[in-house]
Length: 547
Figure (cartoon, rainbow, N blue to C red):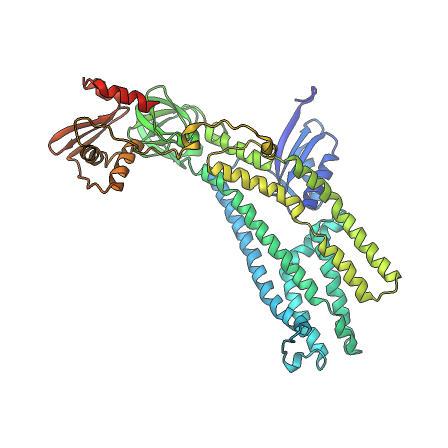
């Protein structure tokens, strides 16, 4: 609610956008709707965030308005891991198609440049007699026509989208490419038809200009599609933390059901070594849980009845029964993912400026190109020179990166941040980080590796190496990070380990093992206290290393 008016915020997927002018056009037509208070389109994510009054505007009105502008719109739905994978596969398939067309265009552009430009270099490249420019000018032109035609077919999307948006009154970067290269191609086609009447027209062919420009723009689109695809990988990796299937206890029996079908209040069985599917409360059992995916703290957290567990965390050595408290979009992991998506979808102030410029840029370039052509024509230059000026202005002024650079940088920045455990709330927050003059950091997992390692062995009554050998041998089967650190230290020092005769994990305390006929206990102060052992002078070391 804003100013006493009920406002609704929704996110729509916009299809058919290729550049900043497209996103500006969608913003422009939706902002003109009566009842719409805000409309922001992110080109990198192809999403529109719109805020409107429900009494005046409906989702159907919004989608119809976008479609009339030459694009397609559909409401965004809550994504699960399956949906994200499907979208990734669609992006990869689209990227593969662009790559195939690009390869074909490059393969055809190389001989085209050889034929059309080979005779212009200081050491002219040889051509077969039937393609000689002076002896067989028509064959020379037809060879270029055929090669160029196939390249333009590979880049037909520029013409389909470019002319469609132009005729709807919202020209974009594709319109510039389509008009410029289309003009060069049609002009060359006319010159080719006139060659039988006069061989001089063979000097006025611009097939290679149209073909090479289309090929280079296709290369840019391919690199752009790869960049967009990589930015969503961090979100998918977060989604993969939560298992697809949960073990639910119903009427005393265990049943494996999809996580999406689990309801609030269901009792889940969490076995050792498995991930916790959803947020909940432990109702029975105890174990150690690795919550480093959320906290960065590598040491497992002890869980007993009444403790909270987080979906996506890893259960180590004990079985637990957990009552589900949050499902779907209410889980901690889902909220983290939503935060990342919002950060990637929200525009930074500098991005809004770039989109505003792009919205006026394309029409201005078309006007300038036409004006330049008219001026040179009035100055008495021939049609070939005038066309060269016209095409040059259109093609050179194709700043596709203008509206894409900032949102892509934000997506890559937030995605890489999430990969390393840094969550950035918005593009605006990322943009103002250059003003930071003080940083406050949590130690574990932030300024440290987040993994424990042995730094010193204190052993008044036994050789340090022998103590390490016994301890590491007993910890061989342990899943605890401290146990693994001890084993890793022994291996690094080349100590030969022996399999213990017996091993038992004592949740929340440590382990019990039989080694060389002796009972060995390795654990924390609670275990030592339960065994009735007085630490004596060793207690001072415990307090020192805890700090």
